[in-house]
Every structure is written in structure tokens, then in C-alpha cells.
Amino acid sequence: MFAILHRHLYTFGLLITVLTVAGLFWTSGGAASTQIHEKTKPATGNEMSTFLALKEARKRVEIPSSNQALRPEALASGDFNEDGVPDLVTGSGSVAGGLITLHLGNVDSVYPNSKEAKERRQREGPFLPGGADFPTASPVDFIGTGDFDNDGHFDVVGGSRGRPQLYVLLGNGRGRFPNTRRIDLPGRVTALKTGEMNRPDGIADLVVGVQTTHDFQVLVFDSPSGVLSAQPESYSMPARVTSVALAQLGANVTSDLAIASGNSANSFCIIALDLR
Image (cartoon, rainbow, N blue to C red):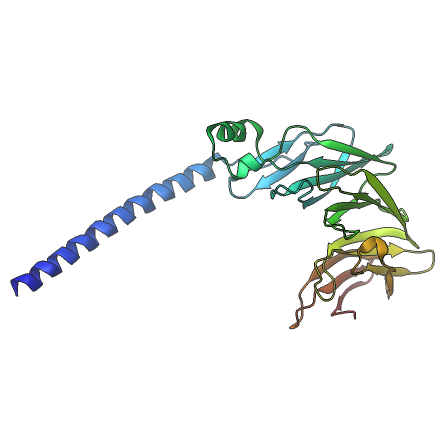
């Protein structure tokens, strides 16, 4: 009996110790969370630079613009130098033209294992200093990323609102875009989205809303060889296409298309489940 009592007393003491340590960790963690929250400042709305909100750190990171006269319009991400860390591309524009800027992700900000890497993390932040600029003839209001020529490297597609062309910057996997291709459209661009359409094949597809001289359309560029090899499928819309989204909306494994179409008098939301 004494042995049993001794064993129960030992178990009870161990339980009290574990609960006490857990309580200390809980208290310190809550204090740290409160401290971070108190240091968070609301973003102001009059700054011309592009900002990235980092949820994990709860802070705002400013990405300097190489040209303050340009107005930022669009963002997209992809691994353009294939180092395993996402990079950021921004689209901007002015009355004189546009700019696509590539900001390479800083691997040391994600995996600061060495002392030098930790110092660079404090100094450089989530992106490497500087950015590569790629001028365009018109403002970049829409931007998307994906492998559009099926060569295994991320590319960038950009377009201007009201213009009948898209421009594709072909990536080489080393953070450069040595070649550019143009896609002519039957109408002016009103919306753009890249991603998987229909049955997943690992190749990015492109969906574009256009306004022609006589109607409104959605164009779907979908090919196993890539967007640049695709003949677009055209779908007539009842009004101007303002936005498109790709998501698995049905019970099957295909990626479906949601379209926002309308004007001040009428609004439509059209769901296309597996167009093929």
C-alpha cells in the first residue's frame, strides 16, 4: 500500500510541475503577443510606395520605388530565380508608360541559420536590396505569373486597362527576362487572372476579360504546351467583365471559373464549372 501511495504522490507531483511550467510559458507568450500588438501602427493612405504586409511579424515593409512618378497598380508572386523563396513583381504606370519591377526574395529572412544571415535579415528585410526594372509602353494595370511557354520557368504577363494587347516577359530561371512576347486580343482588357483552369495539369492558364466594339467576352488560354501555344476559347458575356477568379467550386477536382460582369444598372455573377 505504501508503494502504491508513493507512486500516486510522485505522479501527482509531476503533474503539478508540468502544469506550472505550462502556465509560465502561456503567460510569457501572451505578454509577448500583447507587446507586438501594441507596437503595430496603422498604415497611412497617402504614401506612393508599394507595401507588403507581413502577417507573421505584424509589421509593414516598404519597398522603395525606382520612380516616384509611377503609380503602383498590381502585384503578383513567383519564384523567378528558383531558390525556393517567393519573389514579388509589381506593376505600375503613369501617363508616359509603365514599369514591371522584380523584387527577389531574401532567403536569409526565411532561413537565417548563420550569424551573418541573421545580421542581413535585420538589415535587408524580406527582399534583396534593389530591384530589376522592365519598362513597358503603357501602364501595367494587370499582372500575373506562371509558366506560359512550358519551359519550367516562371514568366510574367502584364496588361493595361483599355488596351488590346498583353505582354509576356519570359523568365530564364535566374531572375531575368531575356525575351518578350506580345499577345494581341480582339478587344480592350477589362480583367485578368492566371492559374489552373479545368483539369489540373501543372501548367498555368490565362483568363482575360475584354470589351470589343460590339460585345463583351471572356477569353480562356488553356493548353498543355502553355499559354503562348493556346488558341483562346471565347465566351460571350451579358455586360462588361470586371473581375475573374479561379477556384475549385464544385464537387469534382477541376478548377472552375467565376466571372463578375455588370454595370451600374445590372450585375451578374457567372459560375462556369469545368468548361470542357
